[in-house]
Length: 377
Image (cartoon, rainbow, N blue to C red; front, side):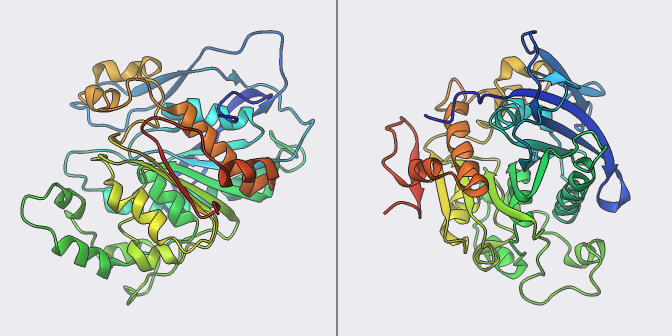
């Protein structure tokens, strides 16, 4: 797995603040290539707001453990670096994906990860609002990248804004697809939900079906669109990776609007984002000519998070077992995830022929992994 090993860059970490959707304060976490010091990096303890109800996870904060260098000097030898915008799962935080984001930075990418403003409650009463707000957060984060890379700013000259990808997990996967140009098709979504029999577990993903009038108002539209909604995508996004990402609000026609390169990953028994409503749906119907699907047969929803020993907040969460236990993977397959996502970024953002050859050629034999790509002959 060529790209599973850490890259040659030391990794720096900083936290910035800008304005996100609904003019709320938006925390943006940055991981970037840094000047290497004589000190061994890490461990670093990241902290983030706890967005769960106290009954689910007590306390004001969650924590994770990584290996970055806080406030390190940016490494400008090979600047500018392509930009990866990372979108976390609903009510989680970028810090619980430190393995992935640190890896991308070590490979020569600047990673900016917005801390989406949302809270988790049992009935998911605020869930629909993020369908509108999250793509705005991505747009504002890319805008902020333009500021950060200006002369005299903290990451001056570091960011290549001609080469931007969005990567996300779960609702962050939805966010990546929306930012890349996928369009809502609520008529198809309602038809999909109406076809379910009573008691089908998939009903969870249909209740409540979003109130389209409220959504249109929140999006600043004069009326509810008939047919496909307008794109909330950002034209600066050149590629997208959806890790167990929700694709059902777009359905087939809305996904067909995707023209940039797409990589989708998912476990086939995922009950957080059903495989056939997420990763498989994305691959089957994305309009892009360059698309890849990496499937994990028998795996669940959380295989993309950091190892649970690096997530101390989970010890006191009612979701510990759900997040830390997988039917197939005793150890998360992050080496596989890092290999394929990095190869995809190198292909789409760096035009690296070696990466393209790896994605298009004979794949390594890996247990519990299936690979499909339009790049293959």
